[in-house]
Length: 163
Image (cartoon, rainbow, N blue to C red; front, side, top):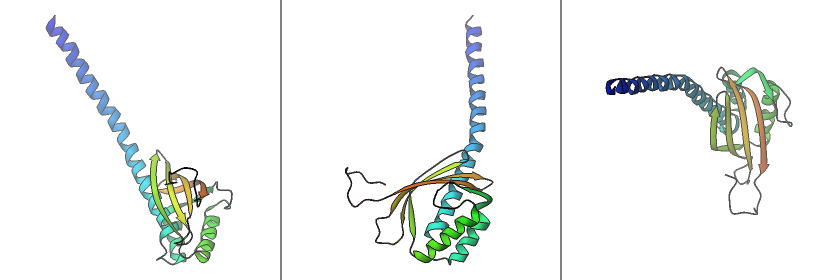
């Protein structure tokens, strides 16, 4: 009876190991996709809002060729829908704010979605805005965007920062 008892536990252990391996194998590609999506979204945001060393036309071409899908959908209410409308909006920002910058404070990804918590500044001396950008990714490009933001106040009702 003890050999039968040991066999059951041994078989259970083998099955548990196989199940764990199968679960890990199915999770691994998802993590790889998530990591790739996050890396690409970060790269694109840096080109979009921080690479003032590049000419605006160069930035837009990189964004057009590497970052934004032709079928891009914009959800922010202050920007018209579509990839070219986004590029037009940012071309205007580059002219108005040649020192536009952003820093990423936090980031996360889940499946085809990426979240970035940003500090965006039009000028170096500005307090700026805290922003959350959400991107839907497909085939290594941004296909959809949602964004919310609020100005960094001079004074806060608490001692915490927005970042």
